Image (cartoon, rainbow, N blue to C red; front, side, top):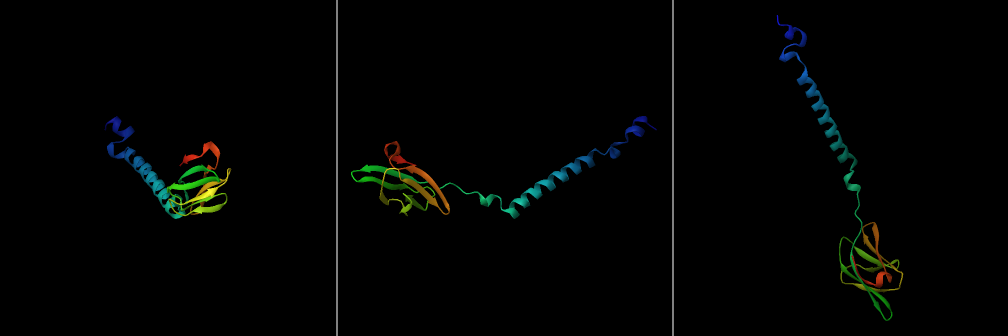
Length: 123
């Protein structure tokens, strides 16, 4: 009988393959559990995107004019706390210091302040 075979066992008795198999099964189980948890808990669906839109702010003799020029993902534009425009191309009057807010569903994001940075176009 060979001493190497008695101490270490032959190729079928070494146990390397079963250990690797167990490690792979555990890894696959963890990955499957994570994927199932994401679907069950709906982790990906709760992320909301900031509302954005492009507006043009022009100074006029009677104050400022805010025009909605690019939709982005906004549903409407609020200026000075009230709804100003519900579609691209609409505009409304504003006063210096009024906040221009893009609204998308339940998300509101301030995108400009009337009278700051000399008017102009902001997106």
